[in-house]
Length: 355
Image (cartoon, rainbow, N blue to C red):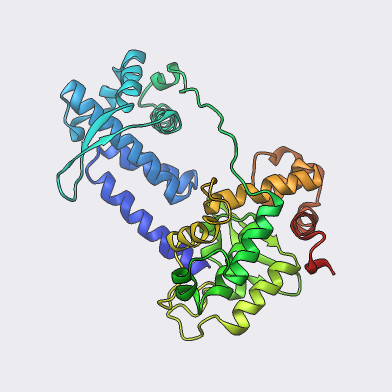
């Protein structure tokens, strides 16, 4: 997993470098500060830099200042009205695709505008911390109000239907079923692992064979922010993984360490898993657009419903929002074990698995 993660981070760092080459030097230093000193994940910093580039392009279009000539003094001269104008600009603007020079119409909903404002605030905080500016004008503008959407997830019965459909092939068309031959056990293992552990798809594709501890029934993964953690798995996950590894996993793949292998013999990609999830859920729950993240929501919703324990749920998901309670207990591993047991009861109670 570490080799895969390092390779992935290198590619993101290259993208950051490509972006900052066309931006003022203080933006590059800002990116380095967050990567090195604040130890932010490269993908997070890439998001910051991309957002700041959009802001620089806004200044070029509205104030006539070329992006490379935007200075710290320029930022210091801006007012809250300028930032408000930027928020309005983000609702609909044009940009040029660097690959073909075509004009692309961009629209940003409230969450995207909020993220861009947050990135701008972070840049101002950096400049203030280094005594380049005295005030954070971006803080004077309120964050866009984000309306909470209802969470889409699979009900317990739908979880069983999806897994059964994957195992039997009943959820696939004839063409899909024919194409799935040779990878059906892998697909079942992926769906079972996502639904029973709630891990992110990016965390799952990075798993190596040696990351699985069969004795302790746990898997080492890397959470957001490169935090190493173990997730515990239950009997259905163990059975699905062993069936896949013993009977179907390619042993002559390019990546001998990767747990999940694509048809081409490479480590499976996030995009391939997204297509896989859509394929196996579309006919079972046609009114719901299910993605890997929705499987994570399914795990969280059903786990909390089963346990009624927000701490168990938060711990199992790898969230850090409840960090303040950790100093009062050493039961983190036990909570994750309880999560594995509880979700098994939620999904499989009353089925043949329990007999």
